Image (tube, rainbow, N blue to C red; front, side):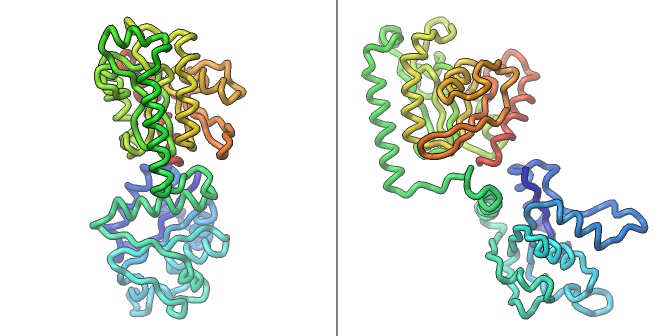
Length: 364
Ligand code: URA
């Protein structure tokens, strides 16, 4: 997991830093985001302690407010020129150790010129900055998170947004697949669908989503509306998504069986064999970077499809595990999870699911 160090001057940027911290801990583990080096033991080398703290991080965010460059200490001299200024020590250390250093401009601050900086941090001026304003906070902070993740993971897990042409092509392909499903008279559940005036449920979400969730099968509510997860387990699913700041339109949600089976029963092997190829085709169209099977049936199908080593493992062993697989379009991850409905009869599983969902943050 990447460790992020926030370097800032309290007098200059405090209003922003707290907000930024709260935003970052939604995308990285709380223990991996550092704001203040505290507990410097009496007698400890202050400079060495700061340097070690920075050396243990992957990225340093240098928050630069409007007075960052000019703030003076009690003796009237510029803080940045003092040898023991912690802002300078931390940035110099990050630059020296080749860490990713991202200047973040707040309060309409401008990037300082190299000549205005002490030599050991002059290279900061060449770093491309991200601007953050209170008015557009979520958007700006989101860009910062993307920049950190992209830089740290070489762009592997994050998907660049599709151009309008690609998006339209994918949308058309999904609509064609939906039409095929509607007309799938050979489906083992077709007559049950027709008798009940129910709808098939192909899925919902972004045609270019980076994350694909695969549930089990539509229930009564879903078959009435043709929308996946819109009953009680959908409420749980929405809560889980929200815990990692995602909305349905950011992901794609489907099921391993696309018509409602009678009497809330488990899907049969024959039904999974019929509908599974729809999931395969959705994967080929959407090209997700991560696939999240929800529950045993979807997990077994996906693990078998990718011939993943633990394919005979139980969901109690494999939930929350990051498994690597390969598609023609590139490497992907599979992270099995319990089905959200489990929370409806075993409340303690909510925490397990929330914890497992945090594994998705690097892909958000
Ligand atoms: N359970 C599922 O697996 N899928 C749905 O769409 C609804 C409930």
